[in-house]
Length: 177
Image (cartoon, rainbow, N blue to C red; front, side, top):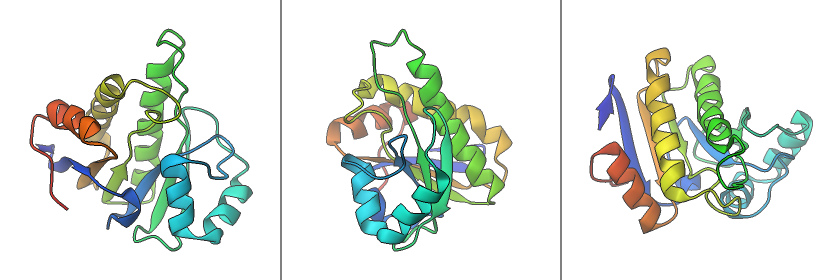
């Protein structure tokens, strides 16, 4: 599906293998790696990523930081720290929306044309995937008018269930990669 000339798509796959300008990492506030997509990105990028993240000194929830991609196909990694789900009444939606917005702001500032997002906060942080999908797609769509150079946004899902939520939110079948 396109929105203002930007291709929005969802796929089931390994975000570390995508050929985009930047992949977004669902990062821990320390930026020092961890489990899930965070650990996979750190392993695939190599030890230089950890060294670069150490120099950043962490990242608060709802914010994002950017590093080179090192051993990844993508040129950059945008590390976004999502909220831990606490029932939905503690500002989780606003913090999650901020992750997507701040990631896109960094991409625009760097002149990037393509970005891939994982399902931020839906793993160990417990954010309900259907709710997170609504926030993710809505935040990206709301930001697009401020991103004239952006041409592609991919939502890379780790499960068929998550992919179904994105297909529904985007109103289109998933992309093949």
